[in-house]
Image 1 (cartoon, rainbow, N blue to C red):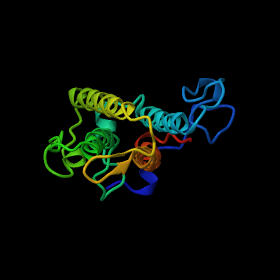
Image 2 (tube, one colour):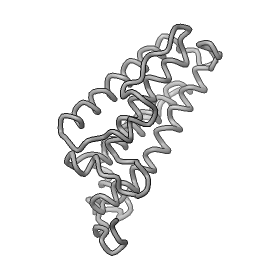
Image 3 (cartoon, one colour):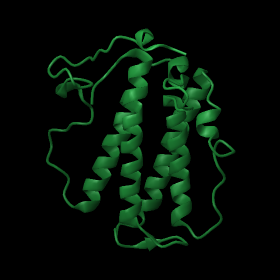
Image 4 (cartoon, rainbow, N blue to C red):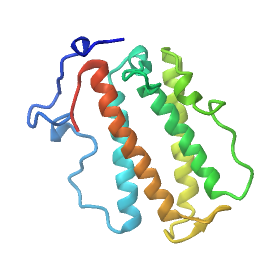
Length: 189
């Protein structure tokens, strides 16, 4: 187990504000355009921002670094988080359908975290899974633009599901901050 003195030195690429991940001009999440109009567009914008943040926290790491369990005894790793969010996106579709649930992507419960391997093929597959599951869930919800509409067996509102998705990504982006800092010392928003 690593001792605190074995941790990498803290650093950032930002030069303007030392607590930022990148300088504002280099941040792909920022746009110079107007804020989104309406509740649905605002929720989708927040979700998009957190998704981009997760990708930024993983950017530039190799397969071993992405699979590293950086905060023992937790089984969390950045790669496990990508796999977990792909699994969660799929599960959210189960919430909005009346049919049989889709099978888990990675098998048994917690396999998304527990079964990560430090191989580039596993990294590529996890990001492909995440992109596919995000797009499929986005498309399923796009058919229901009324935020008050209730879907699935439990009658969850579209609004509630979108807010829950934002909450899930935001929480895991906080975890990603800590995991990334433990991997290579990089810090920032």
